[in-house]
Image 1 (spheres, rainbow, N blue to C red):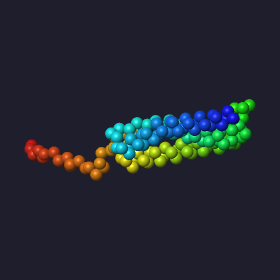
Image 2 (image 1 turned 180 degrees about the horizontal axis):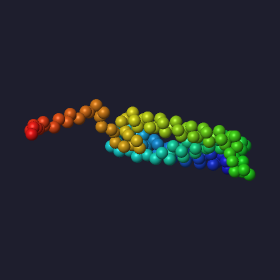
Image 3 (image 1 turned 120 degrees about the vertical axis):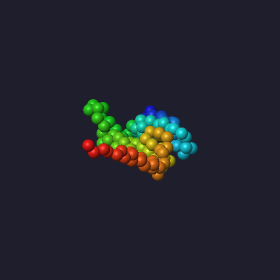
Length: 133
């Protein structure tokens, strides 16, 4: 029963951090805020908390995810780790794509200057007559 409660706490943690550190910056970008900040760490914490939270909620302690004696994950633990890492990577890829689609740069920097702007040509220096000696 304690594992299931822990799973609920992990899901609550994932929802809270996901809301504040992923959803809120995304909404700021959609509202065209002048500058938006976010932390990439959220794309590690949120997926891991969500994947392990769902696992604990469904299975409790019936499926071992770690070997206590060797201090190593079991095959189930490795699968959970791979799922969480994949979810984090795909989530960040999608999130970054949303930022770029709105014209924002890396880490929420302000929208980039219009790429179609071309500066005027620099004129050639004046020609100086030479004297032959």
